[in-house]
Image (tube, rainbow, N blue to C red; front, side, top):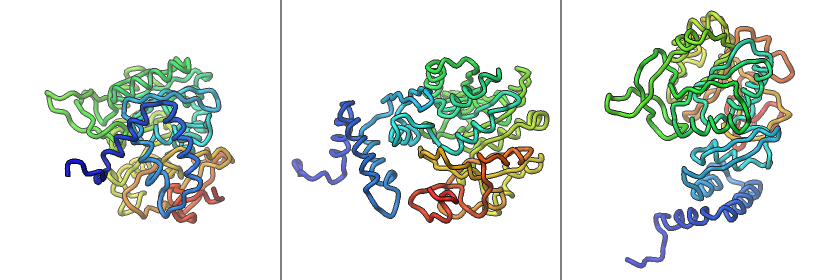
Length: 356
């Protein structure tokens, strides 16, 4: 039926929402309504993932740019491309405390307060955490070295450092890898893209190992942060000399799509590499989202005490040479719980141990 009024496949509704979203004022009012609605909607799953999030996504395209200011005055411009942008945009507070992953951000601030050395960040994205780290180490004369081969996000990264008048940064569109001078390309969309080998006629980027980069600039390294979609193991192998020499704190992501933890997280190649080098390794309990947790300690789960059941998922981890760094009130060691903080899941496993 050429004039069938029904929107069977939802295309007309999606287009209608997109057209509404072209009006910035109306879009803003709808976003405020959806934030209010989240408090009243009760379903078995995640309200954000199943109801409000898809509506917000439909209002935007990947070229839409926002600017938002944190409570400490830090400014961010960002493209509306993934859940990171969406959940930051949907923050309850007009001026929130962070951009993404509240407890990982808090941990990075704690670890870099008195850091001895520079910071390397693989997968710096638009600077959601890197900008805050750079601010935190600037007075100590420390630099942050950001690696982001996604050119659109690398551009946003530079803009955000400029917005915040930070000059203690070195930008790299190289990719971190186990060895240098390998030609790679990004496979997948934006923050979900992982690096694979590129053919001679394909657009791509060159790699560098952390050991080669450290040697090239004669750096002292105090912390390494990696969120590079499965390239963490190879990159740490390419940092063996740096790790042995400087014993930096290491914050990294693991995901079931890339890491086989069926024999226990402590028996994965990635964690064994660090354990065998004398590190203590913990999972960071966190929301893979934006959620205010200002008064909550950062809960850390020893690598052999992590609850891992559930569908394929990922979370952040931290490795330190001396676990006494976590004896401060900022941190809390817990056992036999999931690193994934989820509002709609079993509180005994997926909420902070002292409640939300």
